[in-house]
Image (tube, rainbow, N blue to C red):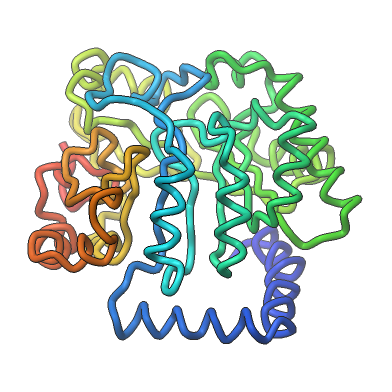
Length: 344
């Protein structure tokens, strides 16, 4: 474990534990949900898509380009409320993020606040461009637990190329204002994590990025994520030959997800079991999806606007897919998953 990771644990994990122990009712509710997760095999973590659509055109994302094959749209509050009614007794975590920018949904932090009232740990992952003064107020008032703010370079040119459509100065100012407002509130929440996707363009400035984000911007910690190519999309693959992607984006020395051997991508640390056998995605229109890699919604098992979530979760079809196919990575989609056994 690195020194920076230890610093985050010392600063935040202990206060989090104290917070939950002090609030005895919350602690007991969490214990109940953990038992449901282990014994009842209910999903512990649910990824929610508040918005399928984005205000940016990042080059390695299929959402804002021509590659996504499903209809895009925004989750209604009614659909979210139906989900919350169905799962509040057992859900541990809501991750508000999938194929789009969640802050485009005007009801996002109303959703977060409602989830927190049911002691569900809430996470929002954002491109950070829409964190206005009003959004900052909504974030702090919602009791959000964690927000990941994307900031992939301290170099304005590199940042604006990788986050096409974003303005470096405005984005950094908005993250900094959020950090300052949180400190004024003197609350442990939300934990504000800087999120950096490591690429060939920024791998030489990671130490600078860490110091800049922690000391100048004021985030609580920094995550460095390995770059992932959206090769699940046939259209993206046709327009972006793997050698070109590797040459432009794959790091030479920094930590990375892939090796490039004999003209072929190979995963450095492949896994044989998938954790999505006990997690799920709720698409913006209420459909229950298989996993975080199925951006096109190829595998869905019902719509919670039409059925109770547990009726979908416990259906014969979904149980079969989770236990026999998803768990063992046997779907066709898994062949190109960034965590798959074999990748070509």
